Length: 405
Ligand SMILES: *Cc1c(COP(=O)(O)O)cnc(C)c1O
Image (tube, rainbow, N blue to C red; front, side):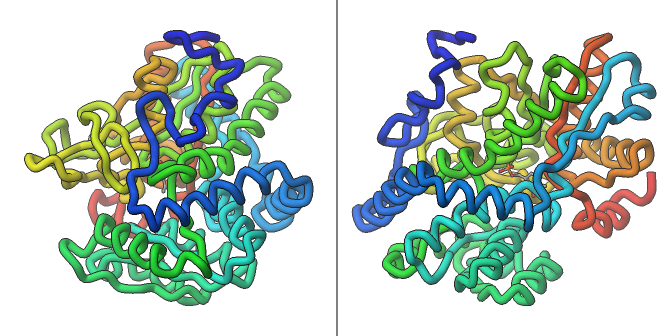
């Protein structure tokens, strides 16, 4: 398939290029000291990802520890309630720890082990990435420093407890607004001081090269499994696939399995309370080109060109940019990026719970809501949703804020 002169047969050979660019997006906008550290990770990754031993070990871990492959479920009752379009879900909620994030954390921590590092460092916002990385660190016997804003520490007590039980050090960041942005800055500063003993493990397909590529590659297992399983189940490819986009990791890995197929691909951004700046986190829909957190992409900016405050009911989606590959796929027209509001996501959260017995994460509920909307316009065919995580973490909040619908 060809879109604007990019041939998806050979896409993975050319994107990203050796400097980490997907077209104009990506790169590594960091200090020279950090550049050297990132170069070390890049070189190790390129060696290790071709090593039979590394691949075999990761495959074994995915099967024995994570519970992969995760299944695809036919959402029969939900489909029937809407019409003739058949909806299916790739069940990343059934991964150990309840979401797709463990896919890249186990890869990153295994890389740290192969590089002879003693420690992994990361930032976390709502705590989901911190919990997944703390899990991986415990599995491999690595130290784990998680930088987290003081405000987020107060809001996310259960995840803070999980990280501590798993043996991680949760390091409180009190600068500025004391949320995710400051945690990212503090974690990168710690990494540039300590990189000889540790590696940085980012939480999505964002940040400087090689992270957007590496995290996508570790998540690619989702798209590969999904394509194979869907073909085996139905004898065909889905007509459309859909996934939510925060930083963009679950979607990047899922989409990668279908880029060269005649399948419509949709990325779903959070519209939050509406289209006014500050009320949403739909960066590809409303943002413009800029550099933040060490990479060039499409981002939401305030009046000073700094990352703008963003909002979504789904804390995993409220990031003011998206990975560089998404900005590129958006420009190419290969992926269509749409938005779903808080209210639509909550309706879908209850619909999937009531009709299928699956309580989805509010992040994933955005993809479910989008599929329901799409199904109503399609008339017939099939849609495969990437159900990125389970909603156990969201239940108290949903009941408190919305009641039982
Ligand atoms: C973190 C998270 C997301 C958003 O992150 P991406 O990098 O965009 O995938 C989506 N769903 C769940 C369940 C999450 O925990």
